[in-house]
Image (cartoon, rainbow, N blue to C red; front, side):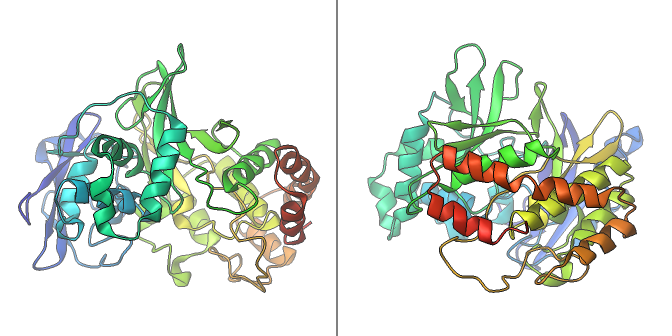
Amino acid sequence: MAKNQLLSVVFEGEEIGLLGYDENLKKSSFQYNPTFLKTNKWLNLFPLIIRRIQPTQVFSQFHSDIFRGLPPLFADSLPDMFGNIIFKTWMETTAKDFESISVLEQLAYIGNRGMGALEYHPSKKVPLDATIDISEMADLVKQVLEQKQSTFADSMNHAALLTIFKIGSSAGGMRPKILVSENIATGAIVPGDLLTDIYHRHYLVKLDIGDQKGYSREVVEYCYWLAAKSVGIDMMDAKLIDNKHFATLRFDRMNGSKNHTLTVSGLTGLDYTKPADSAYENIFDLMLFLKCPHKDVEQLFRRMVFNLVFANHDDHLKNHSFVYNSDTDAWRLGPAYDLTYSLNPELNFLNHSRALSVNGKRVDILWKDVEAVAKKYAVKQYKKVIQEIQDTIPFFVKSALSHGVPKRIVDLMQRRMMG
């Protein structure tokens, strides 16, 4: 791909516009397709950052490791740390230098395989799918993550690496994960990069690769999912595969179609790594701007309290998403995800700073700070919500122990919970 080639941004089969990036000037650009603008469809598809005008819009303010020079809603389609590791390893097997791949070329490899519903054309051709074995994929991912030299990729099976690239380079986050689809009738598991049909369940699977001594992070996350669901937090259905890999249904693949989803960072341009941008109030304010129903506000409040009580410090802006309904041209708060114990329970953290502040505070947060947020956004019966979630701690403890999490680890986690 030429350095300054344009990519077509496609949604539900229609070209929305052209995305460009000038390597020399370090500026990105977007221009709406005039034919699309004339339809007057999907007025809120891009509700922030990009204006709904015909002239080309140029962006030079998004140069960071998070956005890589692109408007944030398109940067949301790029892989995070784990996905980039997989991408780099596969590039080495094709004799290509990952560092020389432009940001637009990486989007072209994502093509129509990415999370959410935005597609990028022309896409790079990637070979077709085959059935897969989760345990084999986990073993291969472990090999990739443990490689110490780039030449290690030369000795790996190219076909297996290709599968990992297809199903592991689009999902966000730091932990190893893959996208798979399970045939409802036969139970066969196939790569989930392209399928959207109603004959499969579409999962994001977090892999247990045995890198945590003494317990499984994925099992802990499953027990957090059980606790969160029990107190009315909206989450997609989930299960354990082989009693150790955490699989959750994707809310961007439902009813045989793709759903347009964006993280808070992708919607707003707020950098989730910057403390100045990272506050729960920013998410509440975004919901008000998007005119979400008040029950979404109450749902976010419940999620916030859960993260406080259950010591999930990694509740950053990319761990909260919104879903667009193309029929109503409206946005809603997406289901919760990545709710888990985020610290190493065996390390002694004193006043560990949270990703998102509450009432301006990241440490030593008190219930009066939570009350201030509740009153600001008119959350009723907030004391009842707090009590309900605190009362769920024993349920989590029982679930974790019954799923084989060592009592020593569970006790250490419980000590840091706000019971």
